[in-house]
Length: 223
Figure 1 (cartoon, one colour):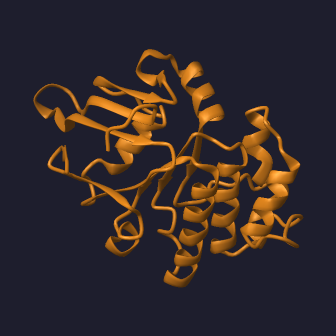
Figure 2 (cartoon, helix red, strand yellow):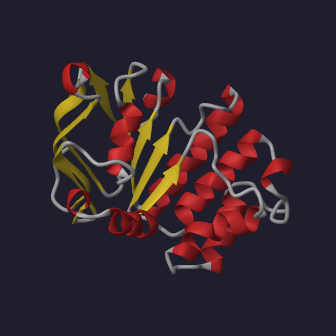
C-alpha cells in the first residue's frame, strides 16, 4: 500500500501499557500507509489493539515509539493543542456510539466540524443532508432520531469539512444489519466522492470484504 503523497503514513509504531513487570506490549514495529482515495478495513480479534491504533492515527493517544503522519504532518512531534488542530482541520472521526451533541439539532450537528475548522459550506451540507436521507429532519435533535439516522448525521459531520482522512471505529456496531448496510453504503460512496482516505475498524468479515484493502492486526503485527 506504499505510495507517494500518502494521506496517512505510520512508521515503526509501538505501544505498551502498564509498568515494570506488568508492562504489556500491544504492538511494535507497525508500518503502513494509506493514500488519498483508498479505503482500508482494519480487522483483528477483540483486544488486539485496533481501536488503540485508530486513536494513535487520530492523535488522541501518543505512541511509545515510531511516528504517525497525517497529510504530511508528524503527529508524534506535536503537543496536544497542535494535534487537536490537525484533528479539527484534517481528520473526520466516526464512532460506534455516534457522539452527537444532544443540545444541537441535525443541521447544527452536521455542520459542527466544518464550523470548527473554519470551512462552513452550506451547499455541501445541503448535499450531505440529501444524500444521507436526512432532508426534513434538520430541526430534530439526536434523541428524536433512530440509531441509523444518528449515525448518518455522524458521517455527515465527519465529511462536512472535507477532511483528508476519515477514521471510523465500528461505525455500524450499534445498528441492525439492514441499517448498518445502508450506512456503510453511504459512507463508502461519500468518501469516494470526496477523495478522502478511509481507515475503518470492524469485527465483521462481511463488512471488511466490502472495502478494497485490508490490514489484519494479530499478535502485535499487521498482515
